[in-house]
Length: 399
Ligand SMILES: Nc1nc2c(ncn2[C@@H]2O[C@H](COP(=O)(O)OP(=O)(O)O)[C@@H](O)[C@H]2O)c(=O)[nH]1
Ligand SMILES: [Mg+2]
Image (cartoon, rainbow, N blue to C red):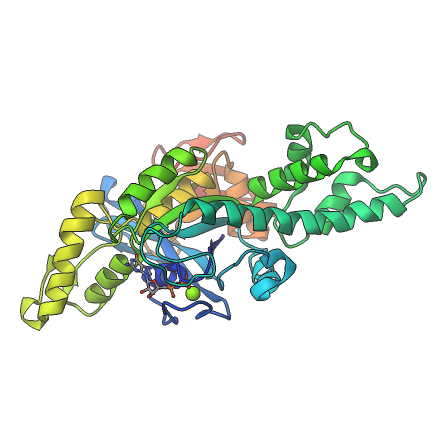
């Protein structure tokens, strides 16, 4: 799974990325600090199944900390998008191209309203963050629209005898954008274009189809970043009312990064996404650091219950994309792999996946040889149609 971070320049995309991956990336308050995309692993967080089963896991991927299991998810941080990016403005078409493979987008917005549309610093409150949501939606729609226009033109050249299947041609045109046949069929239906000859589509049909396709295949959550700044909360409240269809999460990437770094340096005890931290080396902290930590504790953690950054990723994966976490094991009694590692893997699978889907996700060979599955929690054999549940522990039997 790949989650793309999008937004105009200087809203905190790279800070968000760094806070989640602790990768060494360039962060600065001037536009286009990031040119080449940053790619790295962040983690979604679940309450690990090991404590409810009175055991202790040995993760092969990700890690487990204080009863929380962290499951890797790939994150992509690209350069900022500016208006007319789809036409190539600010190398926008290159940056959009880098986002093709993403399953979902996190749109980072500077909710304090202190960066203009180009990403330049302006006095706080001088810019309405609602404009960011509108302009970015428009850029993404125009991006899909321009890709679609190519296939649409192809249709008009085709004679009736040589007419290609509409759905397959659209899927082909969107190669690499994770657009499936099911997506296209569903969108044709929802846009009321199922039975309309594609050559009779009007401009408004094209727009509606491409917009719906974009919304279906690139789901988006809004990270209302810089919530630590004055006036940000009021803007967040306004945006929430103005865009009821979006999940909007208040966050402070800078605060999360400060906590992660202090924790990495052994100064504090902090688990990503928690509402508190503990200072463990008070004598190693200078006055400025103490002030910063006190600010985070009182103005962010107490007020919002977390810095919001971990929540954004968790909500994107589990709510927006509807994934669940499943533990495959080889020994259903010991809950281990063949080497004796307890609950070594957790896989993210789409809700409503079956055990066979899980088998294919592990490896195509295992999928091809799939025979049946056993739930390690109940020791019962699961039916072919069984829908996997969050935190199921599954043994796959192959033939
Ligand atoms: N106050 C505040 N500043 C932030 C936050 N996140 C990022 N910044 C600052 O915003 C500026 C732009 O950050 P950067 O991550 O490079 O933005 P990008 O261009 O979107 O990747 C830097 O000066 C960051 O320190 C935040 O949560 N709060
Ligand atoms: Mg950046």
